[in-house]
Image (cartoon, rainbow over all chains, first blue to last red; front, top):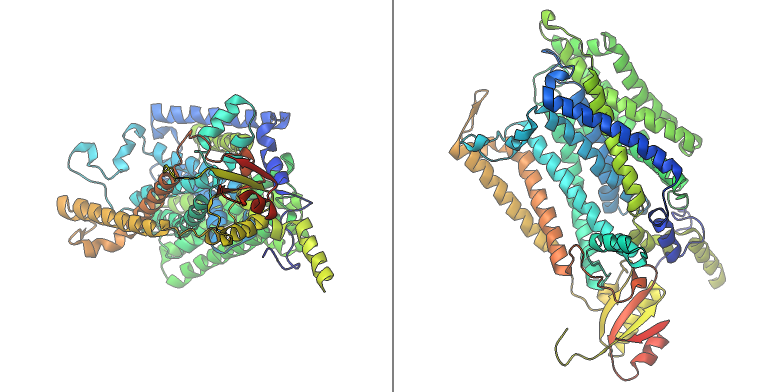
Length: 464
Length: 172
């Protein structure tokens, strides 16, 4: 019943029992934070406060404090928005799509990947909300009569679709994550000795007791949520891409955008998962659960999606030429050779060239190399959005309107602040939440644990 | 469950999921009523072995999806077509059907929203889960690495439990 081919590499290394998994998962929660955690948290908190300053300044003085001008009306705000949403996509892909495909290797990485999803979508949401200027009337985006008069929202607008897509994605990802967390919170609650800790986890665990009927419903709910989250995650970046694709700006008005954006999102999201998990496995000594095999699998996904993104870039260029539309042709020529050439070639180098190293098994199983590439990829994906947005806008139809964009200190503070906020949330999560879905992981221990697999092989020999 | 004629319970702890599954099958074959099994993770095939009915929560989810779909179709129809039709870019909001392609994204999102949230609320209500509720498992070790079978008291029940591999037996 628990048999699995010996060809498959074990997913849990070492001689682990169910109790060992419990101990390894609760260790960060039950021990005090190491100095390195406090240093990282301090830096993240400082960056976060810097961002709070930028946001307060924006609210007080309006978005005129950003570097936008009449020609480049969208720049860092939406670049950062798309960048953060894209990063979020990998978490849902790992927890939902890999669940539907019954990929067991998702189990030791899905919890942290989903946490990353939720935290990055929170960062993403900050940008459009702040770009509204008067944030206190941001309820205008809800389908209620504006100013409580008689005018409704416009359901034909991609910006409104974004509101629905983002709020559904954030809230559904959060409940998906939380349902999975409940049994693990119950495990921490049942072990807790410190009364405050016991009380907190008792609230969080919702009284979970692992009854048979409850597990049956749990599995059904997880499956249905995965089935819902799969088209949902694809729809979110599709809708984000429609913010551009439904416009009539050369460089934006392309039908390739939805799949191109989704592939890019998965690409950058997996890179961020690599960045975070390589640190987590090292700091929390999770090498037995987040194995080199896990890293390798994710690198293969980075390589495949990076190549899809590369094909999309080249298709865009070809279609611009083939369309015969001179504005379209100029937009792409200007990207590669105009004043923002450095952004375009940074994008090309980071996104198309760098993932090709992953064809080499030696490189894709090398942690230091993976870590570096994962950061390079996210820099590249930031440039991708910057290139699409700013270089398409900065040379308007009339040369008299041509302009350049340069960020102000407020733009920089806001962007850095979201990176700080993201890491504040992730670092708090890493010390208080079970970073591995231990209940789920225990179900595959017998089939995919290293010592258990060895026993199967020995049993085979004994029987024959 | 809490009727006056319910018999006292016997709780047996096991340390292996396969043993638990075998024990449940054996106990039921011997005519012992298996009241509950507590486990730290889902045991594949346990619901069938215990004779539990299949859950209908997915069917409920489908109904919630239909509710979401109806809601958003009604909202778009009322707001965009009936109450305040707009003419944007020379494309008037004449009928819902003509406008439908532009509504597909929100219709999809709200259907998913209703399905997911109402299903999870149903899951919480059916399982009696809410913040701060006292743990439902009688023994805290069953969220770590032990498994508990709860059976009704009866003749030879304790011997039978021991025979199926129980490592600890208590009377509740």
